[in-house]
Image 1: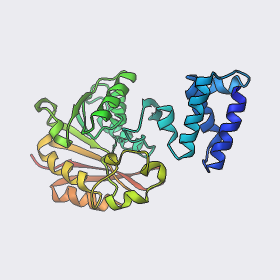
Image 2: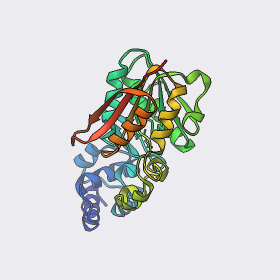
Image 3: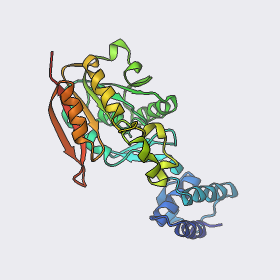
Image 4: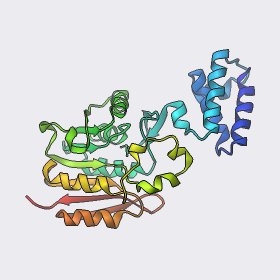
Length: 282
Ligand code: GLN
C-alpha cells in the first residue's frame, strides 16, 4: 500500500478509538515504521511501504488505539528541547518537569556544583543539567536497572557526562558522590490509592514504581529530606517537583527537618510545581 492510503486507514482507526491528534500520531507512527522522519511521510504520499513496514505500522496503530502513549511507540520524547529515548521502563518526561529542570539549570549555572539526582528515570533532569551547566559534577541514581540503561543511553545521545548509580535513594551513592551542593528529584508522588484513578494511558502503560509515592504520596519527600542531612553540604539545596496540592505538606517536612529559605515555583497553569529549600545548619 502507498503511504497516503496507510495514513488514511491509520487515522480512521485512531478516530474510531477516540484518540485526539489522529493525523500527527498516524504520521509519526508511520515514520517510525519506515525509520524515516515525518517530513518524508508527508512529501512521499505515493511511495510504497514494504510488507514488513506495513505490518509494523498496523500493529503500532492498534497499540495507539488501545491507549498506548505515542512516545512508547516511537521510542522518543523531547525535553527542554533535547531528544530522549524512552520506553515502558521509564516515565515519559512531562512538560511540567521542565519547571524543575529550568530552576535547577538557573540556580546551578556554571558554578561547578556537585549535584545528586535521585530517581533519574530516563535521565532527563540530569542530562538537561549536564548539558546546560558546564562545570556541574552530576551523579544520578535509580533503583531500576532498566531505567539506568536508558538514562545512560540518553546521556551518550546528548553527549554529556553523568555518573549513574543503581540503588534505593541514597543507598545507591558512593562516598565520593557526596556531600553535594544540590539534591534534585522528581520522585514518585501519587498517593497509592489514586493510581487506579489516573488516565488509562498512565495507569496501564507507565511504570507504577515511578508514580507510587505511598499512602499519602509523601514517602520519597520524607526519605530524601531526612537523608539530606548526611548527603548535602551545610547550606546546600534540595529541589523537588511536587504535585499541585503538596506544597504545604512538603514545606512542613522541610521546616521540621531544619531547612530554611523555602521557595515554591508554579507551572504554566499557575499550579505549585517546584519546591526548594536550603539546609540551615552547619
Ligand atoms: N526524573 C525522571 C523524570 O522526571 C523520572 C521521574 C520518576 O520516575 N518519578 O521524568
